[in-house]
Length: 107
Image 1: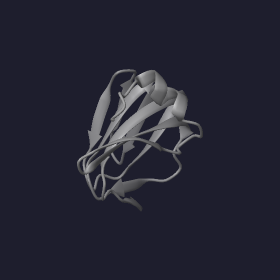
Image 2: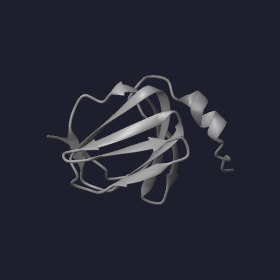
Image 3: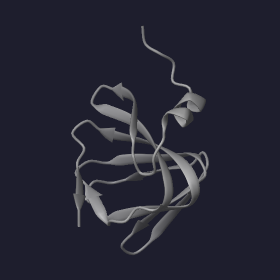
Image 4: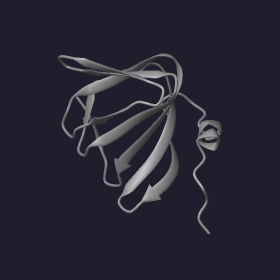
């Protein structure tokens, strides 16, 4: 039997900063969540699109020539190949959906 997905339970599962935990799988996609706190150190890109959604706190996705600031209940899709990094002004809980064959490429 499948379990319901409860946002409060997701928030309890995440532990360390920038260390995603698996929440669910949907066909070829994975739902994960992690704590964002401070700055993710490396500019990188992905081989597939990726959705970031802020459950609690905030997240700024920084690209080479612009940035996108997200508040609670806001999300943003980073397209494959876009160089970026992320930062948060406070301890935040982020949900993401990515392809099963997702890969990060440091640049």
